[in-house]
Image (cartoon, rainbow, N blue to C red):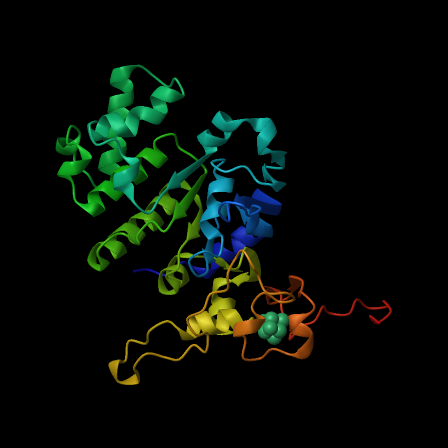
Length: 341
Ligand code: SF4
């Protein structure tokens, strides 16, 4: 697999923001049972993200950290409880769902559940064209077949149903359907997690080829750090609904600064079988999102916690190496400003 070139990372860092999340929150009201008041689950709690043209923004974290809820909000499938999303500086609520869908498309983890089992795959891929009133029926089929061929499915598959395809072929159909409207941004939510390991690399390479050929920008959500290191130009690490660290991929993997990022990277299995499974120091307990810890939400699992960590929540602070929310990395002093009391 070829690595994303550094010059592409630098070029995208200079591009203006394409998609931006501003202080996004998503709160669900959860029933606690009969005779008990409902409780609030803060799935996403104040997330700011910037996606620049040509970037691949990786979002990583354990299950339940809020990364898929962020994806659903970016796609307009889940309304934020507060905060807002802009596309080219315009609020997506003003642009409208259809206009956003033309430019932002999803690829989900399980293609089988998102593909109509009774339709032929050319019909599935041409559906977005039909919904947006593009071309005549024969033209739409022609475009769909061309896109299927582009993602590696020959025209003879055009009338196969999803049930006649392998998992990897179904994911190719889902990718063709996402790209047939020629979007600018693709939100990939665990796009290879349901696939055999042997097929994962093929789909990742296809996504990278398509990015190059169509000038695409990706948000790439995954719990697999090795995949994210390979594909992303920048990475945001989420924990309990918040971004705790964000940096360019090479910087984050070379010198992670947040103790949670350090533990996540330590948990990646080494290819050397003699070294065994590394101890992350995280333990198994992911905190109850209905009852998050006070102060730094990571403090019950953090080997480097200090007294203030259980009382004072750290703020995501930008710096030359990226942004981090941890009291070990305090806000840099602004020249001429009075020191904090
Ligand atoms: Fe650990 Fe404290 Fe940093 Fe939280 S703020 S990650 S508890 S050192």
